Image 1 (cartoon, rainbow, N blue to C red):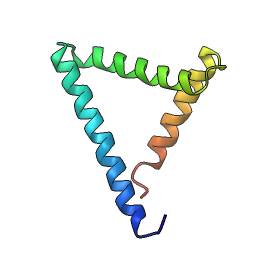
Image 2 (cartoon, rainbow, N blue to C red):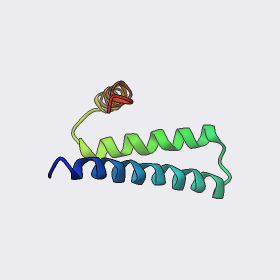
Image 3 (cartoon, one colour):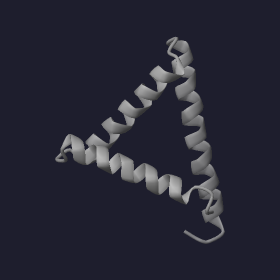
Image 4 (cartoon, rainbow, N blue to C red):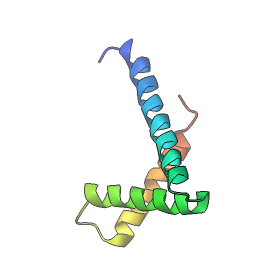
Amino acid sequence: MSEDSQPLTDITRKLRVEQTVRDFLEILDNNELDLEEGLIAWNMLGFTIFQDLHPDESHEQTHQRMMDFSKQLFGTRGRS
């Protein structure tokens, strides 16, 4: 991938993620779930994704992987 296309790829990815979040919030609204219930659902979804990616890990390992991912993601936020 050329350096010229990288910023466009990053922008496109960010827009897809933002649209996914908007869609998720719409689903919460359509199902009359409040934000606390939405947070529980979001965490369950994340855990399920990590379990699918690493099926041989224990519950504790998956939880730690999620925590590490969140810390890394939060730590790099705004460093573009």
